[in-house]
Image (cartoon, rainbow, N blue to C red; front, side, top):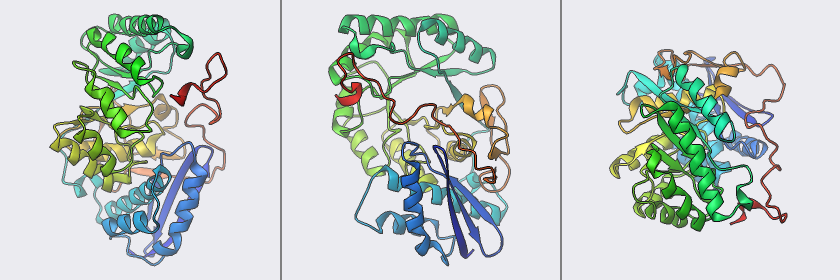
Length: 376
Protein backbone atom coordinates (compact mmCIF):
# COMPACT_ATOMS: atom_id res chain seq x y z
CA UNK A 1 0.00 0.00 0.00
CA UNK A 2 2.95 2.37 -0.47
CA UNK A 3 1.88 5.57 -2.21
CA UNK A 4 4.05 6.20 -5.28
CA UNK A 5 2.22 9.12 -6.88
CA UNK A 6 -0.45 11.71 -6.12
CA UNK A 7 -2.13 13.36 -9.10
CA UNK A 8 -4.18 16.52 -8.70
CA UNK A 9 -6.13 17.86 -11.68
CA UNK A 10 -8.40 20.86 -12.24
CA UNK A 11 -11.01 20.68 -14.99
CA UNK A 12 -12.90 23.96 -15.03
CA UNK A 13 -14.57 24.27 -11.65
CA UNK A 14 -13.97 20.60 -10.85
CA UNK A 15 -10.98 19.29 -8.92
CA UNK A 16 -10.01 15.61 -8.80
CA UNK A 17 -7.30 13.61 -7.05
CA UNK A 18 -5.83 10.20 -7.93
CA UNK A 19 -3.57 8.33 -5.50
CA UNK A 20 -1.46 5.50 -6.95
CA UNK A 21 0.15 2.69 -4.96
CA UNK A 22 3.15 0.51 -5.72
CA UNK A 23 0.99 -2.52 -6.50
CA UNK A 24 -0.81 -0.71 -9.33
CA UNK A 25 -4.02 0.34 -7.59
CA UNK A 26 -5.49 3.82 -7.99
CA UNK A 27 -7.85 5.58 -5.59
CA UNK A 28 -9.97 8.49 -6.76
CA UNK A 29 -11.29 11.53 -4.92
CA UNK A 30 -12.86 14.92 -5.55
CA UNK A 31 -13.09 18.16 -3.62
CA UNK A 32 -16.17 20.36 -3.31
CA UNK A 33 -14.73 23.85 -2.81
CA UNK A 34 -15.95 24.68 -6.31
CA UNK A 35 -15.29 28.41 -5.98
CA UNK A 36 -11.53 27.97 -5.69
CA UNK A 37 -10.48 24.65 -7.29
CA UNK A 38 -7.00 25.88 -8.21
CA UNK A 39 -6.38 26.82 -4.56
CA UNK A 40 -7.39 23.32 -3.46
CA UNK A 41 -5.10 21.90 -6.14
CA UNK A 42 -2.21 23.93 -4.72
CA UNK A 43 -2.83 22.52 -1.24
CA UNK A 44 -2.83 18.94 -2.56
CA UNK A 45 0.47 19.67 -4.28
CA UNK A 46 1.81 20.74 -0.88
CA UNK A 47 0.64 17.38 0.52
CA UNK A 48 2.62 15.35 -2.06
CA UNK A 49 6.02 15.25 -0.30
CA UNK A 50 4.39 13.81 2.80
CA UNK A 51 2.19 11.32 0.98
CA UNK A 52 4.76 9.86 -1.42
CA UNK A 53 6.18 6.75 0.21
CA UNK A 54 3.51 6.65 2.93
CA UNK A 55 1.30 3.66 3.74
CA UNK A 56 -2.05 4.34 2.07
CA UNK A 57 -3.86 2.28 4.68
CA UNK A 58 -3.22 4.71 7.58
CA UNK A 59 -6.23 6.84 6.65
CA UNK A 60 -7.02 8.38 10.04
CA UNK A 61 -3.35 9.15 10.71
CA UNK A 62 -2.96 10.85 7.33
CA UNK A 63 -6.12 12.91 7.94
CA UNK A 64 -4.70 14.44 11.10
CA UNK A 65 -1.22 14.87 9.68
CA UNK A 66 -2.49 16.72 6.59
CA UNK A 67 -4.93 18.87 8.56
CA UNK A 68 -2.37 19.83 11.21
CA UNK A 69 0.74 20.28 9.02
CA UNK A 70 0.35 24.06 9.10
CA UNK A 71 -1.33 26.37 11.64
CA UNK A 72 -4.14 27.25 9.22
CA UNK A 73 -7.74 26.29 8.71
CA UNK A 74 -10.53 26.84 6.21
CA UNK A 75 -12.63 25.11 3.56
CA UNK A 76 -9.84 25.11 0.96
CA UNK A 77 -7.71 23.03 3.35
CA UNK A 78 -10.49 20.64 4.37
CA UNK A 79 -11.54 20.22 0.73
CA UNK A 80 -7.99 19.18 -0.15
CA UNK A 81 -7.93 16.76 2.78
CA UNK A 82 -11.34 15.45 1.67
CA UNK A 83 -10.18 14.65 -1.85
CA UNK A 84 -7.18 12.69 -0.55
CA UNK A 85 -9.26 10.99 2.14
CA UNK A 86 -11.81 9.77 -0.41
CA UNK A 87 -9.02 8.43 -2.61
CA UNK A 88 -7.51 6.52 0.33
CA UNK A 89 -10.85 4.94 1.24
CA UNK A 90 -11.32 4.03 -2.41
CA UNK A 91 -7.88 2.37 -2.40
CA UNK A 92 -8.60 0.41 0.77
CA UNK A 93 -11.91 -0.88 -0.57
CA UNK A 94 -10.29 -1.95 -3.84
CA UNK A 95 -7.43 -3.68 -2.05
CA UNK A 96 -9.86 -5.65 0.15
CA UNK A 97 -12.37 -6.22 -2.65
CA UNK A 98 -15.31 -4.63 -0.82
CA UNK A 99 -17.38 -1.45 -1.14
CA UNK A 100 -16.32 1.31 1.23
CA UNK A 101 -19.58 1.15 3.17
CA UNK A 102 -18.60 -2.30 4.45
CA UNK A 103 -15.46 -0.76 5.95
CA UNK A 104 -17.53 1.92 7.70
CA UNK A 105 -19.65 -0.49 9.69
CA UNK A 106 -21.97 -2.11 7.17
CA UNK A 107 -25.22 -0.98 5.64
CA UNK A 108 -28.27 0.06 7.64
CA UNK A 109 -30.47 0.54 4.55
CA UNK A 110 -30.98 -1.08 1.18
CA UNK A 111 -31.33 2.02 -1.01
CA UNK A 112 -30.66 5.73 -0.80
CA UNK A 113 -33.52 8.20 -1.00
CA UNK A 114 -32.86 11.22 -3.19
CA UNK A 115 -34.27 14.71 -3.41
CA UNK A 116 -33.99 16.38 -6.80
CA UNK A 117 -32.58 19.88 -7.13
CA UNK A 118 -34.92 22.06 -9.15
CA UNK A 119 -33.24 24.83 -11.11
CA UNK A 120 -36.15 27.06 -12.06
CA UNK A 121 -37.15 30.47 -10.77
CA UNK A 122 -40.71 31.52 -10.07
CA UNK A 123 -43.88 29.60 -9.35
CA UNK A 124 -44.80 28.31 -12.86
CA UNK A 125 -41.33 26.98 -13.66
CA UNK A 126 -40.78 25.38 -10.28
CA UNK A 127 -44.24 23.79 -10.19
CA UNK A 128 -43.66 22.25 -13.62
CA UNK A 129 -40.23 20.92 -12.64
CA UNK A 130 -41.62 19.49 -9.41
CA UNK A 131 -44.41 17.71 -11.26
CA UNK A 132 -41.90 16.17 -13.68
CA UNK A 133 -39.68 15.05 -10.80
CA UNK A 134 -42.57 13.31 -9.05
CA UNK A 135 -43.57 11.62 -12.30
CA UNK A 136 -39.98 10.37 -12.55
CA UNK A 137 -40.21 8.72 -9.12
CA UNK A 138 -38.80 11.33 -6.73
CA UNK A 139 -40.47 11.61 -3.34
CA UNK A 140 -38.75 14.89 -2.42
CA UNK A 141 -37.72 18.04 -4.27
CA UNK A 142 -35.57 21.00 -3.30
CA UNK A 143 -35.93 24.54 -4.63
CA UNK A 144 -35.29 28.21 -3.96
CA UNK A 145 -38.62 30.10 -3.73
CA UNK A 146 -37.12 33.59 -3.33
CA UNK A 147 -37.95 35.97 -6.22
CA UNK A 148 -35.09 36.95 -8.52
CA UNK A 149 -35.19 40.57 -7.31
CA UNK A 150 -35.47 39.61 -3.64
CA UNK A 151 -32.88 42.18 -2.57
CA UNK A 152 -34.99 45.14 -3.69
CA UNK A 153 -38.44 44.11 -2.46
CA UNK A 154 -40.30 45.44 0.52
CA UNK A 155 -40.52 43.07 3.46
CA UNK A 156 -44.20 42.45 2.81
CA UNK A 157 -43.66 41.71 -0.88
CA UNK A 158 -40.68 39.45 -0.16
CA UNK A 159 -42.72 37.36 2.25
CA UNK A 160 -45.79 37.23 0.01
CA UNK A 161 -43.98 36.18 -3.17
CA UNK A 162 -41.81 33.59 -1.44
CA UNK A 163 -44.81 32.03 0.24
CA UNK A 164 -46.84 32.06 -2.99
CA UNK A 165 -44.11 30.22 -4.91
CA UNK A 166 -43.85 27.61 -2.17
CA UNK A 167 -47.62 27.23 -2.21
CA UNK A 168 -47.59 26.63 -5.96
CA UNK A 169 -45.14 23.77 -5.61
CA UNK A 170 -46.99 22.25 -2.66
CA UNK A 171 -50.33 22.45 -4.49
CA UNK A 172 -48.77 20.75 -7.51
CA UNK A 173 -47.11 17.80 -5.76
CA UNK A 174 -49.58 17.27 -2.93
CA UNK A 175 -48.98 16.09 0.61
CA UNK A 176 -47.05 12.90 -0.19
CA UNK A 177 -43.92 14.67 -1.44
CA UNK A 178 -41.41 16.38 0.84
CA UNK A 179 -40.39 19.96 0.08
CA UNK A 180 -36.89 21.12 0.94
CA UNK A 181 -36.63 24.92 0.85
CA UNK A 182 -33.22 26.37 -0.03
CA UNK A 183 -32.72 30.09 0.73
CA UNK A 184 -29.06 30.16 -0.37
CA UNK A 185 -27.87 32.46 2.42
CA UNK A 186 -29.64 35.42 0.81
CA UNK A 187 -31.55 36.96 3.72
CA UNK A 188 -30.63 39.16 6.64
CA UNK A 189 -31.51 37.72 10.07
CA UNK A 190 -34.51 40.06 10.35
CA UNK A 191 -35.78 39.11 6.90
CA UNK A 192 -35.41 35.46 7.81
CA UNK A 193 -37.53 35.96 10.92
CA UNK A 194 -40.36 37.14 8.66
CA UNK A 195 -39.92 34.76 5.70
CA UNK A 196 -39.35 31.42 7.43
CA UNK A 197 -42.54 31.36 9.57
CA UNK A 198 -44.60 32.18 6.48
CA UNK A 199 -43.53 28.87 4.95
CA UNK A 200 -44.63 26.79 7.93
CA UNK A 201 -48.17 26.12 6.66
CA UNK A 202 -46.72 24.21 3.70
CA UNK A 203 -44.97 21.80 6.09
CA UNK A 204 -41.53 21.74 4.48
CA UNK A 205 -39.22 18.91 5.45
CA UNK A 206 -36.65 21.63 6.09
CA UNK A 207 -35.72 25.25 5.38
CA UNK A 208 -32.02 25.70 4.73
CA UNK A 209 -29.38 28.41 5.00
CA UNK A 210 -31.48 31.52 5.48
CA UNK A 211 -28.53 33.82 6.27
CA UNK A 212 -24.85 34.12 5.47
CA UNK A 213 -22.41 31.62 6.94
CA UNK A 214 -19.99 34.08 8.55
CA UNK A 215 -21.04 33.39 12.16
CA UNK A 216 -22.05 30.05 13.61
CA UNK A 217 -23.79 31.75 16.52
CA UNK A 218 -25.81 33.98 14.18
CA UNK A 219 -26.93 30.96 12.20
CA UNK A 220 -27.92 29.14 15.37
CA UNK A 221 -29.82 32.23 16.49
CA UNK A 222 -31.98 32.23 13.36
CA UNK A 223 -32.67 28.55 13.81
CA UNK A 224 -33.76 29.04 17.42
CA UNK A 225 -36.16 31.80 16.39
CA UNK A 226 -38.04 29.63 13.90
CA UNK A 227 -40.33 27.52 16.11
CA UNK A 228 -42.30 24.91 14.24
CA UNK A 229 -40.12 25.04 11.10
CA UNK A 230 -37.47 22.33 10.71
CA UNK A 231 -34.20 24.06 9.87
CA UNK A 232 -31.06 22.85 8.10
CA UNK A 233 -27.53 24.12 7.96
CA UNK A 234 -23.96 23.09 7.29
CA UNK A 235 -23.17 22.75 3.60
CA UNK A 236 -20.46 25.41 4.00
CA UNK A 237 -19.27 24.23 7.41
CA UNK A 238 -16.32 21.91 7.27
CA UNK A 239 -15.23 20.61 10.70
CA UNK A 240 -16.74 18.75 13.63
CA UNK A 241 -15.89 21.75 15.79
CA UNK A 242 -18.11 24.07 13.75
CA UNK A 243 -20.94 21.54 13.75
CA UNK A 244 -20.50 21.06 17.49
CA UNK A 245 -20.96 24.79 18.10
CA UNK A 246 -23.99 24.92 15.82
CA UNK A 247 -25.71 22.01 17.55
CA UNK A 248 -24.72 23.08 21.05
CA UNK A 249 -26.28 26.50 20.48
CA UNK A 250 -29.63 25.00 19.58
CA UNK A 251 -29.00 24.82 15.87
CA UNK A 252 -30.16 22.69 13.01
CA UNK A 253 -32.49 19.73 13.21
CA UNK A 254 -30.87 18.73 9.93
CA UNK A 255 -27.14 18.95 9.31
CA UNK A 256 -25.76 19.19 5.78
CA UNK A 257 -22.14 18.00 5.59
CA UNK A 258 -20.52 17.68 2.16
CA UNK A 259 -18.01 14.82 1.98
CA UNK A 260 -15.97 16.80 -0.56
CA UNK A 261 -15.66 19.82 1.73
CA UNK A 262 -15.89 18.53 5.30
CA UNK A 263 -12.78 16.35 5.34
CA UNK A 264 -14.00 13.36 3.35
CA UNK A 265 -15.63 10.21 4.68
CA UNK A 266 -13.37 10.08 7.76
CA UNK A 267 -14.59 13.42 9.04
CA UNK A 268 -18.16 13.42 7.70
CA UNK A 269 -18.73 10.14 9.54
CA UNK A 270 -17.83 11.92 12.79
CA UNK A 271 -20.14 14.83 11.95
CA UNK A 272 -22.99 12.38 11.44
CA UNK A 273 -22.27 10.75 14.80
CA UNK A 274 -22.16 14.16 16.47
CA UNK A 275 -25.55 14.97 14.94
CA UNK A 276 -26.91 11.63 16.11
CA UNK A 277 -25.91 12.50 19.68
CA UNK A 278 -28.03 15.67 19.36
CA UNK A 279 -30.98 13.82 17.79
CA UNK A 280 -30.27 15.68 14.56
CA UNK A 281 -30.69 14.09 11.15
CA UNK A 282 -28.31 14.17 8.17
CA UNK A 283 -29.23 15.41 4.70
CA UNK A 284 -25.99 15.11 2.75
CA UNK A 285 -25.06 18.08 0.59
CA UNK A 286 -24.00 17.14 -2.90
CA UNK A 287 -24.22 18.88 -6.28
CA UNK A 288 -20.94 18.32 -8.14
CA UNK A 289 -21.36 15.16 -10.16
CA UNK A 290 -21.21 11.36 -9.89
CA UNK A 291 -17.97 10.92 -7.94
CA UNK A 292 -19.07 12.93 -4.92
CA UNK A 293 -22.56 11.47 -5.24
CA UNK A 294 -21.14 7.97 -4.90
CA UNK A 295 -18.87 8.99 -2.02
CA UNK A 296 -21.93 10.41 -0.26
CA UNK A 297 -23.85 7.19 -0.84
CA UNK A 298 -21.30 5.24 1.21
CA UNK A 299 -21.88 7.60 4.15
CA UNK A 300 -25.67 7.49 3.70
CA UNK A 301 -25.60 3.69 3.66
CA UNK A 302 -24.03 3.30 7.10
CA UNK A 303 -25.46 6.07 9.30
CA UNK A 304 -28.77 5.62 11.13
CA UNK A 305 -29.79 9.30 11.03
CA UNK A 306 -29.71 9.79 7.25
CA UNK A 307 -32.91 11.19 5.66
CA UNK A 308 -32.28 12.05 2.02
CA UNK A 309 -29.39 12.85 -0.33
CA UNK A 310 -29.16 15.76 -2.70
CA UNK A 311 -29.26 14.77 -6.38
CA UNK A 312 -28.57 17.11 -9.26
CA UNK A 313 -29.73 16.65 -12.86
CA UNK A 314 -26.00 17.08 -13.54
CA UNK A 315 -25.51 13.50 -12.33
CA UNK A 316 -27.71 12.18 -15.13
CA UNK A 317 -26.02 14.46 -17.66
CA UNK A 318 -22.53 13.32 -16.60
CA UNK A 319 -23.39 9.65 -16.18
CA UNK A 320 -21.07 8.81 -19.08
CA UNK A 321 -18.62 11.62 -18.31
CA UNK A 322 -15.15 11.49 -16.73
CA UNK A 323 -16.40 10.03 -13.43
CA UNK A 324 -18.64 7.04 -14.00
CA UNK A 325 -20.58 5.44 -11.17
CA UNK A 326 -21.20 1.70 -10.92
CA UNK A 327 -24.91 2.28 -10.19
CA UNK A 328 -27.56 4.41 -11.87
CA UNK A 329 -30.55 6.18 -10.43
CA UNK A 330 -33.76 4.16 -10.14
CA UNK A 331 -36.54 6.71 -9.96
CA UNK A 332 -36.01 8.71 -6.80
CA UNK A 333 -33.48 6.31 -5.30
CA UNK A 334 -29.94 5.03 -5.77
CA UNK A 335 -29.14 1.38 -5.07
CA UNK A 336 -26.38 0.65 -2.58
CA UNK A 337 -23.23 0.01 -4.68
CA UNK A 338 -21.57 -3.39 -4.55
CA UNK A 339 -18.35 -2.70 -6.49
CA UNK A 340 -15.07 -2.46 -4.53
CA UNK A 341 -14.03 0.96 -3.27
CA UNK A 342 -16.25 3.93 -4.04
CA UNK A 343 -17.53 2.29 -7.21
CA UNK A 344 -16.33 5.07 -9.52
CA UNK A 345 -14.16 4.95 -12.63
CA UNK A 346 -12.31 8.22 -13.30
CA UNK A 347 -10.87 9.11 -16.71
CA UNK A 348 -9.21 12.54 -16.97
CA UNK A 349 -7.68 12.07 -20.41
CA UNK A 350 -10.08 14.67 -21.84
CA UNK A 351 -8.82 18.13 -20.81
CA UNK A 352 -12.15 19.83 -21.57
CA UNK A 353 -13.17 22.01 -18.58
CA UNK A 354 -16.26 20.92 -16.67
CA UNK A 355 -18.94 23.39 -15.62
CA UNK A 356 -20.43 22.00 -12.43
CA UNK A 357 -21.93 25.18 -11.03
CA UNK A 358 -23.35 27.01 -14.03
CA UNK A 359 -22.13 30.49 -13.17
CA UNK A 360 -18.92 32.51 -13.19
CA UNK A 361 -17.63 33.07 -9.67
CA UNK A 362 -17.83 36.85 -10.10
CA UNK A 363 -21.52 36.81 -11.00
CA UNK A 364 -23.34 37.46 -7.73
CA UNK A 365 -26.57 39.36 -7.01
CA UNK A 366 -26.40 43.14 -6.69
CA UNK A 367 -29.11 45.37 -5.28
CA UNK A 368 -30.63 48.16 -7.32
CA UNK A 369 -28.29 50.63 -5.60
CA UNK A 370 -25.24 48.68 -6.82
CA UNK A 371 -24.28 47.10 -3.49
CA UNK A 372 -23.59 43.40 -2.96
CA UNK A 373 -26.78 41.60 -1.95
CA UNK A 374 -24.86 39.00 0.07
CA UNK A 375 -23.12 41.59 2.26
CA UNK A 376 -25.52 41.52 5.25
